[in-house]
Length: 251
Image (cartoon, rainbow, N blue to C red; front, side, top):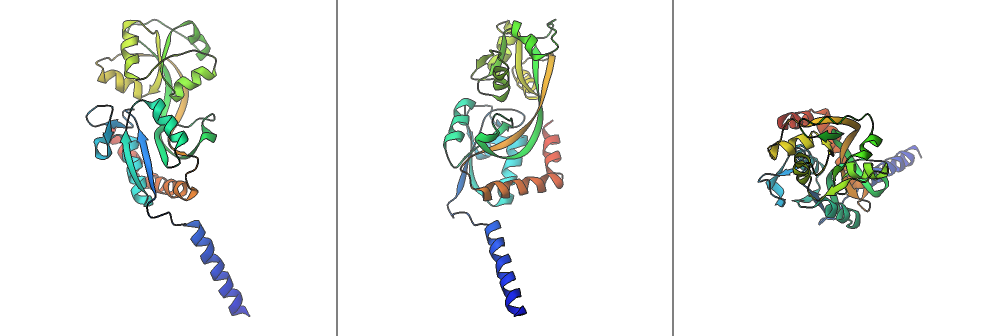
């Protein structure tokens, strides 16, 4: 009798293990999308389209290693604009997007793996500007440029503000220095990195209004097994120091 109980217990544990480590279909593959968002993800040749090894950056290197360790196949494409990639990931079951800022508003829209990195949201002014504000509401009296459907832009809109959205964040550098906008709502250190690429330095941080975390956002229909494997792989990479090493290699 005891032998039967033990046998049944072992069978139950084996079934639980098989459920916990469910096999994915042989042809299962995640379609990974990203954009030029240096230093986290970017095309090696600075163009607005790239695939696989033509993409680098902090998050790109981390995500590649996550998928490799998790044993999940993928394709990786960098495209433009972010707004289109965001909508594709919302609509397509096998799609995923990074680096995506995690917010409470976005939380129910995707399944999430992360954080990949931490950032801050800032309002930047042109060199020599004397603009001074103490809170986000104060920015309403100025023309504020932002990046369409980016989390920073969405945050401003949720506060009742009306940012002037551009389809490329690089456009905001030229708008800022030419006086077409007074402030640029962007992510730190991304904004400064982009500005330097455009030959602009010395931007003033007028306000730092939020700390944020960057994640891999997966379509809501993504199997939980995929999410769990990827999160486990990321947690292991962080514990081993891989995340810190990759981050330090870019900054």
